[in-house]
Image 1 (tube, rainbow, N blue to C red):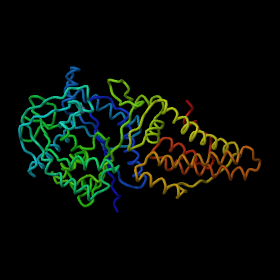
Image 2: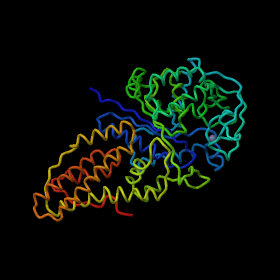
Image 3: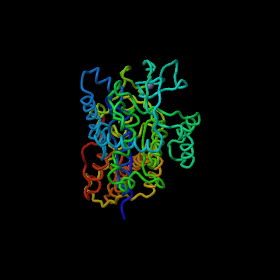
Image 4: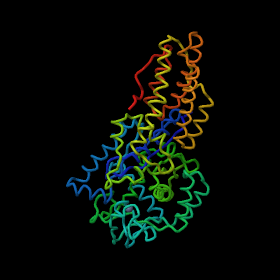
Length: 481
Ligand SMILES: [Zn+2]
């Protein structure tokens, strides 16, 4: 029997700035799900990459006086560097400037056109370059984009191609009705239903090349390039080379009867991922995604992170200072996945000190030290706590990353108390000492087994250390700050 396939993708970050902590949280959560699926014996396809077209990038490169491709090459490399920095396990990194992506975005366009969903009309809109989105009057706050109040909206007036999104309003609502778990958390589902309920407007999917040449060419029309969102969204299936082996593609992406693709995104991507992209898939005759997780934002000391405030947190800097697993732990344990969470370095350090240096690190050091000193020998079992496994699995399946870790840390705290109460360092009978330490060591090993998708390096070290017959004191896992 073939292994069960598991597909997961992040959104593709737009390469107009360095990676920030919000994207780090998104991709680390995806990485946990990918690693967990592998641990459960599934065959995993994990995609990420970079979104590189559009007006914003075109202008940034112009400002800097470099070729646009050169500019995006530099940023794409910085995003791919996250793989090492955050110990990510993705196997696919697609850039929207890749040849195959451009070709397949064109083929995708042709399928929508063949289905009668693409037409040309004169176009006059208010456009936010910050969002790379057109805004309707009802979305404006004081005549400005609510996300970019410092930026003037641009008026675009030209003949463009349009996608018949309006034809998909009922189909999307019907689809959500039949798939109530399609969007996690449920309140985001209500939000998108309400948005569609107010009526869908067809959206423009091209720009005049003479005004904005930085895009994928529209098939059969040399005067137009694709609107950046249209081409970029198709990456999620282009990374699977759907043109080459369709059967292989559906075995991973899923079929209409049995969709299989999990997508993760920030809450600013709700409309694009759950409604635009799904309508595009329906139009081109592809199966929809299976589920879309919509994460909350991370604020910095109560404020939105932005370049102008200068409070953007770069994950590379944090990893350099505290180490990869400390950063992964913070992102997964301290932030609420589906709500907005606030970051400060103070909170980061407090969590590090309490849970890693004093919690896990201290218990592992104390236990291994006592075992070595008393020259004990154990034959511990792997994954021996079924109750712990079930509780932990339930939380992961609900995507409660923080709660899953909380279950493991409760077990560690329980062991801390146990060892303190028993005080084996005061005992004289070796059999008695051995009995106490074996229980603690076995529980540490059980925790480490489950910790692997979250803190891969740390879990591996503990597993190595505690599966040996003679457990020895190792290096400090998380030295106190
Ligand atoms: Zn905006």
